[in-house]
Image (cartoon, rainbow, N blue to C red; front, side, top):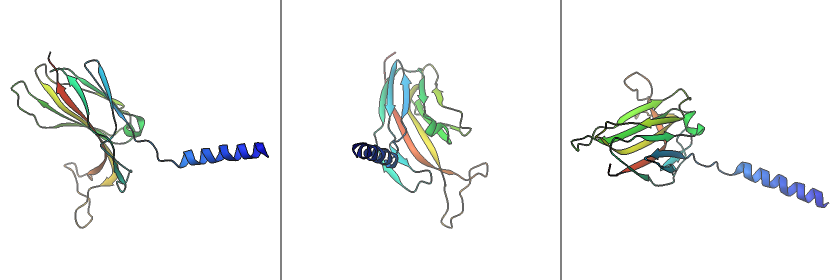
Length: 165
């Protein structure tokens, strides 16, 4: 009888663990000898029907011209994802956002680089979902290549605090 109760409780624990919500992917940022781990600002299911707000942006001090390395888990790298980067040039002017998109499922890391006199300001990771943007009639909104624009399902943000060289 006692073994049966223990087995029943162990089975219930496994069943409850299997039903718990999966943890949200974390992104690791590394720069200038320091590492931070970011929770998503917002994270949605693949079809972007259920979303939850999570964390805040993370911060790192980074000197001008220094790279930021980004590491994404397989839950992100196995889907289309993008890196958005904004920086200030040597004249102090904020530059337009640069974007790099990965769709092959093989890119688990990325190194953000700038010129020697440029200061990174923001590095943002976006995981794309299976849903696409649509107009009021439900027709897909197409990008410049004629492909449906996928909707972002997760966002992680690194805010850069300038450090002295």
